[in-house]
Length: 234
Length: 293
Image 1 (spheres, helix red, strand yellow):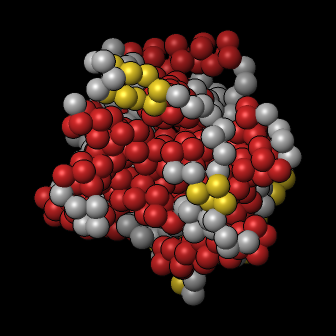
Image 2 (cartoon, one colour):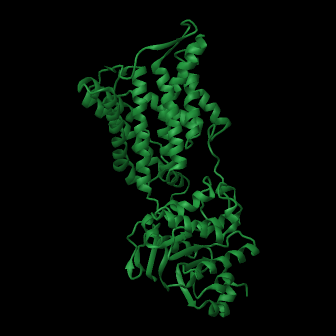
Image 3 (cartoon, each protein chain N blue to C red):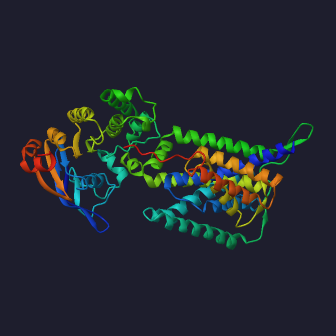
């Protein structure tokens, strides 16, 4: 479904992504794990069109989308739930969710999906009119995920959903990610919490300083000695 | 009673500042730039109304609409040609460009309309209301000015908070990248912002030129700077701040002129600004940047 071929992304003279390739198949959960600064977020932003690659291609159903402007990417069925959530703090919970559906025209369907998001995140349902900036970190993460779902994506890019959350909340969030996937949304997950990510991933890639150094199923990487040493604390 | 007279005329002047300040504050909030050519849009609006009304003999309503249209189009064109190519540039480059655009507009006006001062016609209304046996006289123009400001404020607040485009604009003001992830087109949003700000500048132009009926190419500079001051005073980026800053500035200026010194009024106005910024650097209603991790 989504195929990244030999992608190179530069910030000025600095090469942040040095030619990576990976593939996300329909219905899968695929994860990119790696340390801070490895290029995970850069990869996500490039897929979302916020960054333009220096070379390489990003294929969605075999069509290159690297020339598509960022605000048109979501219409193609790719929604991103960005790192640090990036919710709109001065707007209400419900307005945040509706902004997620900004490019959709099907009003009745939007209403239905809103109910769907509230069913998935009952915490948000009690806070529809509350300003998003006043939510707790966990609630903000749920809001950011709900907002991405409101775009009715075929594939959801999730960037560090566990960041700054308590272990209990991380578990809850990961259970919800699995639920979302079961509802038919393909997931590309970027995480520093390698153990959690590998635990739910069908396929995983390890990215180090802009290069993919290893790949396999989530289970294979969990068992790999290299991965254990570098990312799972021995 | 004279105090009340000065207060009311200060309120009217402040209303004009507030309407102009909205243009500065909205553009700053969304495009994160100071559009120093905003004052000269006012000038363009004044000339547009003047030519439509006196030279082409169009009715007042049509002249006002033409003036608004001229400014809206001008604002959008300026943004597309001068500012959009600098979206990734440093804010200093954008600032210098804006000052350049300001001079360009003033010089173009000199070339097109001449540098002589023209008398602006009383396009809106004449006459006045008398209260307390004629001790307090309030002109219809003053009332119209204040009412216009109130209507614009209410309308704009509803637009920003209740409509889909308004919410998208607020999203852009808060986080442009996240807004794009929602499918919001930043370029379109910035264009709309310039269109609204410039349209409001035309309304301010007509109110201003009706109160001080002389038209010259540098007409917009001083009100522009004052309104910019008002926007910073109230907290740049904040719509209620623009209203509060504008009204306070107008009242302070008028009372200073009445009771302290006409020559010193501008100096005192700016001194107040400096004091406010020393105590509250974000302005009266400015938001502190709150980052939650």
